Image (cartoon, rainbow, N blue to C red; front, side, top):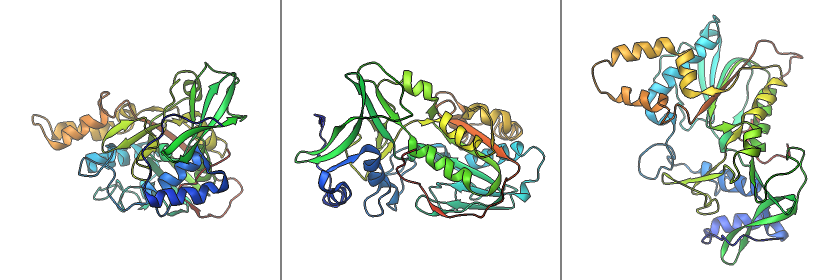
Length: 350
């Protein structure tokens, strides 16, 4: 079993103890198992700590669309109502999954939906009835597996706690139905399998209506052919890095989602999925009237709302970095009853 030379400074005592407990006698975790520990463990997980993570304030780690204030929620509400295609928004419950705050993106926003609720990370998710289900950067926050192509074979990567700190190690030759037959020597593939499993779990709930999710991702072909260094990144105090093992439990770990997989999970359960589009195109196409109202109201002056709009739409900011997948299910075959499951789903052998 090979070991990476890139050991990080030793983790804190609490994280090291949790790692040893999960790793057991072997002392090694598969990378998605390490990610589940570092992100979602109730005691030491990054997303289980009650502190601000998103924004520009002290101690935050990254900036996203929710950081611009209520404007994002206004545009999402307008776009989703347009996508309901004549159906009354009052007949639907707006459910935000993975909300960073208890109020979610519709807090303080006049939206027209019959009700609105949030499901925060770690809370049980139950969906039934007519819903508009929305998620912002939910799927990229799931644990992921890592493989490297070396000496003619894919080799799964894991993490081991050594005397010098955490180290990335090879777990040996691996076979998985998702893996391509071959790749260039050293090609690193970050596979968001848990994100696909979470999509399947959401789609399996007995609800009808609209899904809209914003995230950054690629097609499976792009992940297999156009990202030789992988897509996994760490975010700590607004600094992006490849130091995935540094600050475990204190930094965000993320990789690009595979849009093909997520769309396939919803399509397999009766949803009609639309082609993925950029966040800029999504709002221009489906919230055009609201954008026109904003442009007229803010004309001739430089304002916070105008700046927020530029951050959401401009290609140099969030407009092209993020994409949006939408899907709609009008009928539910076979009935069914809602079943609560924890959010997120955790590591998967998808």
